[in-house]
Amino acid sequence: MARLPSAERRRQLTEAAIRAMTRDGVPRTTTRSIAAEAGVSLSVFHYCFASKQELIESVITTITGHYVALVREAIRPRETLRETVRAGFQAYWDHVSAHPGEHMLTYELTQYALREPGFEHLARRQYEMYCDTYTELIDHLRRTMDFELTVPVPVLARYLAAMTDGLTLNFLVLGDDTTWTNILDTITDHVSGLVREEVRP
Image (cartoon, rainbow, N blue to C red; front, side, top):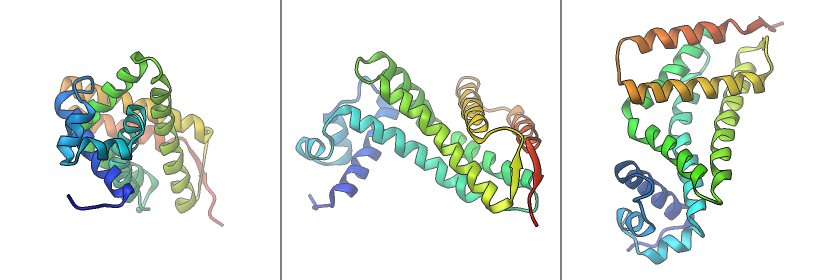
């Protein structure tokens, strides 16, 4: 077995955990099955992760990172703010459509953390991370496109986190159909309408 830096080995094990949990569910995924999925010994797993809590937090952070990178790239400034915002929502939605299992896993991790004594803070951290991510993306847009909002950034960030969370769960339950494009257009119009003015000199 090749010797890898600790950070790279953690990344490898986290991605293996995502695959195993997506396939088998969180309760049925063990540290042994994750190590087997990654092709490493159990001792390597325990060297990289001190606890299952630490692993779950890494899984949540990594899944979020998968689609945030796509959204960040998609919201490069376009001709209008609306086009830019719509591109960001589409990038997120494309990831949901292409990787429904990963997104289903995030809900399972939330429920698991809320029900498992001592893990409750992971669910809270998960949803704080969603808000932090939207705050970062909103601030990025404000810097690059020079506009002000009619609502505080933390309020808009929490709203967007709740909206995409609910919309994603609806998609996972109801499946794909032709209405999602119209829903994303409606959300885009709403968010674009929260811009007070551009502040260009």
